[in-house]
Figure 1 (cartoon, rainbow, N blue to C red):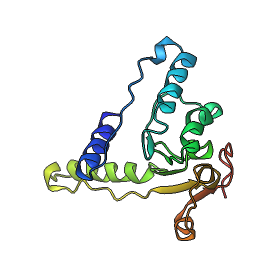
Figure 2 (figure 1 turned 120 degrees about the vertical axis):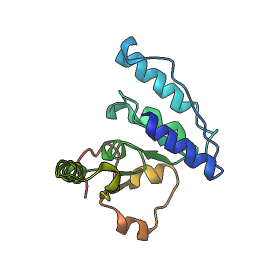
Figure 3 (figure 1 turned 90 degrees about the vertical axis):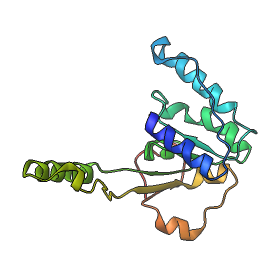
Length: 171
């Protein structure tokens, strides 16, 4: 996930945001439970030290233990945003904007390959794919952090979860 990390780091530098990193020494090869325990310790160490948390894709995070990651943060009023999508939000992250459908990317790539096959030079083709994103919020997670989501924001959501552990049953 180096590309995402570089983008996050660049954004933080450009916007005067202090990025707090918590390296986790365990590896998945050490065992899934040991790895997840170390991840939970890492998240818990952020409580009281940061203003917000952006959960990246970390391999073995399970929904059944998600609140072990997040409760210490929410008790401090710290919002948690997820990179990986609605499953994290269903299980307790407050919000995400994510790619929900890879069909647009597939069509875009197929079109570019076809144009190259038909003689166009790759450098002459636009590489901007305007794919749609999905925006979802978990109201119960926001409540836990003491955050009231404005109605205008809720109107923009593709999915709204009203409890933690809701899984795919969004309304």
